[in-house]
Length: 141
Image 1 (tube, rainbow, N blue to C red):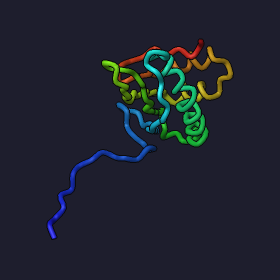
Image 2 (spheres, rainbow, N blue to C red):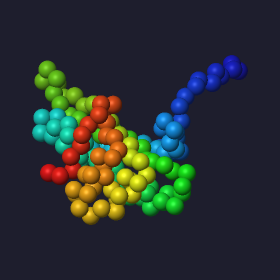
Image 3 (cartoon, helix red, strand yellow):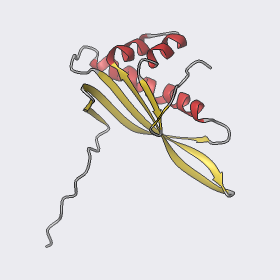
Image 4 (cartoon, rainbow, N blue to C red):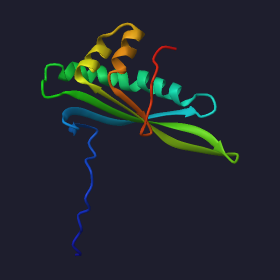
């Protein structure tokens, strides 16, 4: 029987405590198996839809669970959705990654807000990335 080499790999857990700079954050990753049409739904709209359908509900649960845990200083949630397009007439599907990073107080304000304007103000206290590029996401339509 041959010895098996152990290959280094990163954590494959979807929920974990991580360090982001000097802060301890709750990091949540996942896949959203929605597929948006590239020609009908632009990047900011895809980001907003995934935020409202997936990230906000996850954030609601996470903040409720960790609200009294002083070790959690923020939240980092990354979700992949899919984009459908045609390249040279051939259907093409590719993942697109949306990441939202929020300090603890901004996350709490965001989930407690009833008004979309208040939510957007809380979201602006953090960072949003689409495929690693900063995105100024708008929640107001």
